[in-house]
Length: 398
View 1: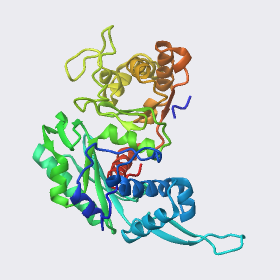
View 2 (view 1 turned 30 degrees about the vertical axis):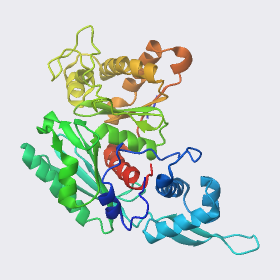
View 3 (view 1 turned 90 degrees about the horizontal axis):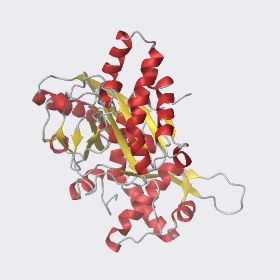
View 4 (view 1 turned 135 degrees about the vertical axis):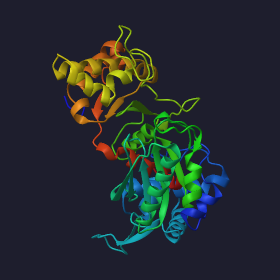
């Protein structure tokens, strides 16, 4: 088995950021705008601009008449919105459509996919901070990395320096900076706790915004990753992404909306006890945490030390993951679980046992069809998720 509210009238991304540096709700969902929903008059233009951008983002180049049909907006409204978006540098005309029909050919417009760049940072590594310059389509055009210093203040300085280097290498206006960080991150981009780096109450979003004078969005790395899977990986509206590395965490979308939790710790499944029969001691001091079975260092060490074959150890880890996931799938009625991490460990025996355990511990009639698969985005998933954060926060696109 292969588990295999752009703001009205800004002249630039920076001007929009100064008016409202971060949407009050953090990310906004924009994959499927509900054109029939009531929108307050003062918000209508921003909503409609995002609707046009969202349609072009996913549908590609089309005429103004096509946009009117797909969005439900009038042609007059579309013409006005497109003119404004062209002036702001977010939309371009692409020439005329080839047609055998009589009459004047339609002029196609599209998202200005090369007009801006996004800087993404992945701070989830234990030894290296990763960064990239990305297009609006999530394609990486430049990369950089830096070693993780042991000192907390030096680590912050390294993040800022990495971001500055990437902004300088963007060779286009930077729409914003997205950061996927370890630990618990609140809605304002404050890292409440990241023990591995010694960060406690660090306003990383504020520090980067001050240093770069650009829009910045910071989120937990697994929450960033699930956004990448939603936008670029074809994930469904109800999906849990399990990210396995030095630790174990997850990002969750319900109805296409990110779930953060009352204390911003939704998805912290690594220290859920899944070993009522005992099990390995976790770094947190408890016995039987999921992380003690599934985190890459723990799992590779068990494989090396075990007298059993590798597949048996992986199936044991997959069973523990299924035990942790079954209540979540049952309560939230999820349709899909995506695994992100080393394919050689997660794909195959581990994923198969996860599915088997899920089916044994949930209501068969409803949950036998839950899909468990590997992401196809590899190790760039957090960087691409950071780009989605900026697209969503600045343009209303996801």
